[in-house]
Length: 293
Length: 166
Image (cartoon, rainbow over all chains, first blue to last red; front, side, top):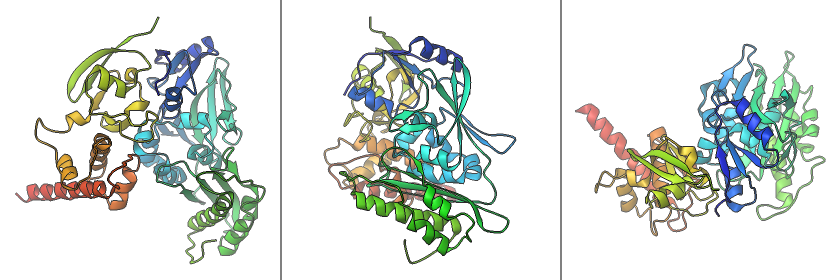
């Protein structure tokens, strides 16, 4: 339960960190919050000859509002700072609602958005939130900056499209439209545990008061956070009422495969997707009902 | 050639320094180098919360932070909670409510509760349960821990109100 030996460096600029990573292609690991990497180092499931600590890089963390209303969150911003940010509460209410579900307070005090996205844990909240908000991820390397959509970033469990010499620099969330509604639900065995299933739903209402955009994103499915195409499409053009919610629930699990494991059966997971799609959509639309989908 | 770093931090108000390898966790450093063994190691992978300390007033799993990362930081451990021989209100409430049996998780519980009450002096029972969910206990069944914390919160509000009245 102790890591193998490694060397340690804490650069004070992103350029220095990029150079260090490029100079040590097979041997170096970036450490930010360490809430996922350190357990792996302790178990010796991951190793590094050199740990590059990016926590001291000024300007790599922080939350700011762009002139266009976009919210920029720096890679080493702690989940806890996002949770407590009035700017996020006002301009990214979905993210604000989801933060209390991310692990436990002590983990949120250190863990970072960049670390969560680069880990690509299938049951994590951040990848799903970024997909729901159509966020863009900025990656920095010796070749300059590259942007990847949140949808394109996770490839498989613990695998992303980040190149080995790239460092995630910031995440950009487009301005939250005034006509957007959202819902967020997550089920786990104990508060703070990994999600069994979680759903983040955003709906945009047109001037005709019909749903003109819908993104229902699931996490905990097994491979990666996933935009659920069928129920999202089922909502388009519809009047925002219970009938629309029912239509989305009916196809919520379309095309999805579920596994049974120690925590939950496949059937339970399938049922959770249906119920949580229903609950998040009702929350988004302000519908209260006895039924629960 | 093992890299050895002089790590210096303020622990419970006192500047402490020792040599550490980069791979030494903050928990290892506190326990083995500084002989502050009140911080316990339960799982060494961030699941149990027994190693919880405060870094700049924020709860941290000391097994998931390397000592070198705490260079020049302000650390509070369980050893810094009592005032000499005088137990804090939280410690006394734990004692009164039987919120500990074997005591292994207790330092972590106290540190997490300290942060909770600093952030939220008037938590609901559900808020206490949620905030304390990262600290596992094998002995008590948790209820007495929640009770102790709520009792302290109520007690502090009452003395604050009395002070205002005086």
